Length: 239
Ligand code: DGL
Image 1 (cartoon, rainbow, N blue to C red):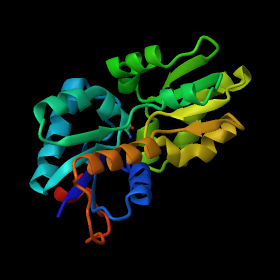
Image 2 (image 1 turned 90 degrees about the horizontal axis):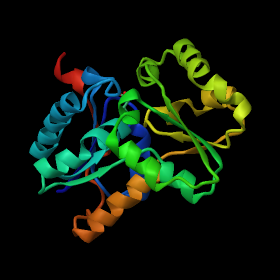
Image 3 (image 1 turned 120 degrees about the horizontal axis):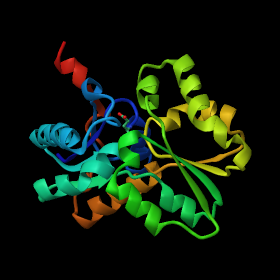
Image 4 (image 1 turned 30 degrees about the vertical axis):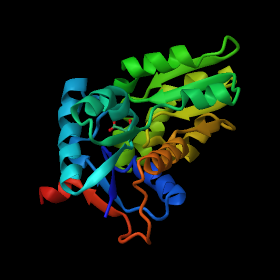
């Protein structure tokens, strides 16, 4: 039986898992929420490569041949190196949906990401490749936000959003790239600071890419899924 491993530093990647289940209702998913190492967004590339390699080893032992990095930080920092280290596995990752903003013709786009994602080479490449002359892009490193979401600390989330986004209120922002998979959980709170913006994220693109990879490699699950998604939390292994 083939299984698809999906991971993030916590609950963020569940927003991607939801989309994966919609697009691929027959597949068996294992979701790993790495709370123990949350947040990823303040880690170095080296630290994150060690952490993500351990998760990949774990998924491999469980028989996964397709691994979804449901985290923009881990994808932008580590996916290239993980592909080199594990050439026999198929990796699909999520990057900030800068291309979606470009394709859809938005003019003033705010890109919310973690501090590590903002500093990554992959993000620089995306900004170079998908930037029209008639388009303003504003990058914001939302330090501490993913962790506040993980802790469900509504007061802190609102404080951080005011700190990071309120200066863009007067700039007629038309779209917000949710460049961290935790951020779709707080769309309502972002709208309070930036009313009327359109939200863009990579979840549907990831699900379609996984479908394409499964078809290309003939890895689709033919029958009914054997299990509902298995949700594992790294802290469970410590208790
Ligand atoms: N959800 C992750 C992302 O997409 C990581 C957030 C974090 O742990 O800092 O970037």
